[in-house]
Amino acid sequence: MLDAPMQLPQLKTSLNNLIRHSTKSVSVADVSLPHLTVTRVRTEILPTVQPYRMSVAELQTYQAYTQPFSKDYAEKLKKLKEQERLSDCLDCIDYMLNNKVRLEQEAMLT
Image (cartoon, rainbow, N blue to C red; front, side, top):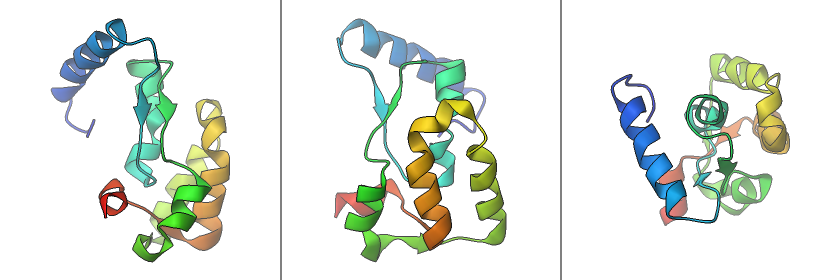
C-alpha cells in the first residue's frame, strides 16, 4: 500500500531498481479503488507503470469473488474517471460502476 508516507521512498527505490534490471514495464494488479489509483504511482514514482489484471475480463472471470461497494466508494470511482492518466482503466471503472462490484487481488489467487 502507498498510504504510509514512509513507504513511498522505499517503493520508489525498489521500482527504480527493478526497472534498471528489466526491459519490460512494471505492472500493478488489483481491481479495487486503492489500486486503481495507479495514477499516483504514475505521477510520483514511475510513469510507465501499466495496469495488470485490472480489466473487465478479470472482473467477469472472478465474478463469484467480487464484492459490492458503498455510494461513497462509487463517488470516488467516478472522480477517478476524470483523471487523464487512467484512460486505459476507463472500461474497467465503468464496469465496476455499472455492476457495483470491486475485486481484491487476493481473490485472484484462488
